Image 1 (cartoon, rainbow, N blue to C red):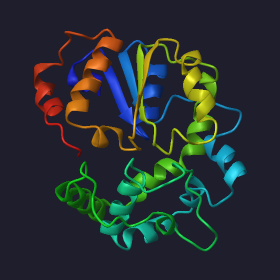
Image 2 (image 1 turned 180 degrees about the horizontal axis):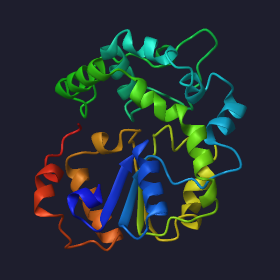
Image 3 (image 1 turned 90 degrees about the vertical axis):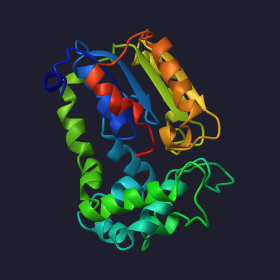
Image 4 (image 1 turned 45 degrees about the horizontal axis):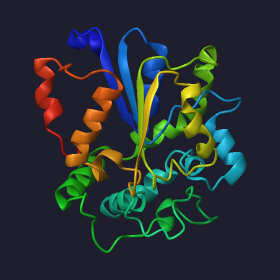
Length: 258
């Protein structure tokens, strides 16, 4: 992509599945990455087994990543009513979800489906407009859910392919941002990984935990927090005063939650 844009370096930012893409881009090509920002998902070093195997051994086949493995099963459920699917997923994973005891790893009971453990909200939170929801619904009605679900189905393959980089560190300047009500932050092992992230990302400049924020970091904390996060990013990664190429500025200035 950098070559196609005629650029030699970039700051790479990613959220959720995009975060491992960003972290691993920085790990694999530190010569092309000036800085890396991961949102929600911290960098996790390659373990003795894949994350899918580890989570399945702890939570069983009801863990949502395991539920997503069989082609066609999750697609059929999620496509039945795309509007309800998107509404439930977005709100149930957010800081506005009515979870008295805090976020918990999603485990599906035998005979149930993913949507059975996600409450259907009576109204949309302030950060999610009906227009944005309609956009997401239209896109998934057009594409289906297999593309996104296949990321989960490639977890074991990705773990196998990364074997040559066992023990490798993410060396570019880095920033990690997450919400304290994000279900990922509350997964088993995260309370040990996040405080020690600098062991695996030695140039980690800052960890920013957003109070009351759930999984959808950039949507839930858009607006004023977007500027604040950009300032944290620039100062933390020593990028103050650096401007993107002119042809990319309109794309970066559009904002919004899409």
